[in-house]
Length: 456
Image (cartoon, rainbow, N blue to C red; front, side, top):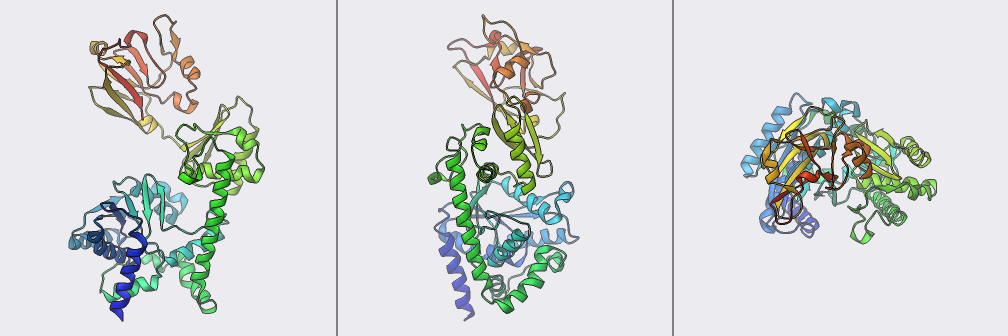
């Protein structure tokens, strides 16, 4: 009977995810060392050769528990025994403690996952997690999207797709599988601490629910699916309310790259409820944390009532994100860190240079089309610097010299970028502001070897 149960679980996981993951895909498994992720590791280890998947593992070392080093050692030994590549990612939770330990740890895990090279991230969420999350979201006053079911496959961790192979499996069934195969796992001592809301639900409330409503997992899972359908309809409505900004629902409804921000007029033309729905969807598509209801109302008020020429900046998500209104459009982006105004980077022919002020890269491409004359750059050191004030250049041979301030305004460079843009100098001469202008004296002639400089 145990063998049948084991084979049934392996078959169910195989049937659920094999249509979702193409052959040759690189799957990165998030391994905590707990029973859920250990069982998932063994299941994927068995399935990977069958479907030509490449399996690797990441363990996020939060350092919260005094046993954190021992957990990392456990994961190292486990992956060594199975001959699976493992990456240990050490993170510092201290700067995010104001969010709460659970939220901070979750944020750091997501950040660690997003920085890895893979096609799919496999997480060990199961049906009990689904129900616990529903309760927690409802107790926080979440809307239909927050109360929606975790999908088996999603794509909201950077460019990675997230797959949850155990989502239709109960925790009890997972433990049965682990015991049947004598699998080792570790117990996080914090799982016994009922001061954490999730643990209180798991140990105190849900056992009482099971006594009165034995099928509560199945019925509440259906509810999360109803919420998910309602959320999908609201997303469809948002795309209809801003068709110029979003692609069609048939292609996922992503932000169009050429969209350039959400038009304030779109929000102003809608009822309050529809405008809030559109703003939520816009933020969600950018990967921004969802603001609280009061904050969302305040955002909408400021965006829709500001003067036409006003530049609005609203901090949210613990000042980690910023929402702007500029020239009739709404922009949202992670808050940019402080930067060193004296920062300088010398270019010696590299294909790209890091530009910390904008969390970006400056790309250099050699070609024989119009750009910056490579020959004219040989006369002195070529450097990237930040704006100091008073810079100017002549953008065309017959044009007058223009101040950088005027050029940036004319090119509609957003105010939050103007002091952070990389300026390319040859010696003390301003040669180029990527995406804005090239000094006439340094522009290449037809057929001349040149370099184009772009910000990525």
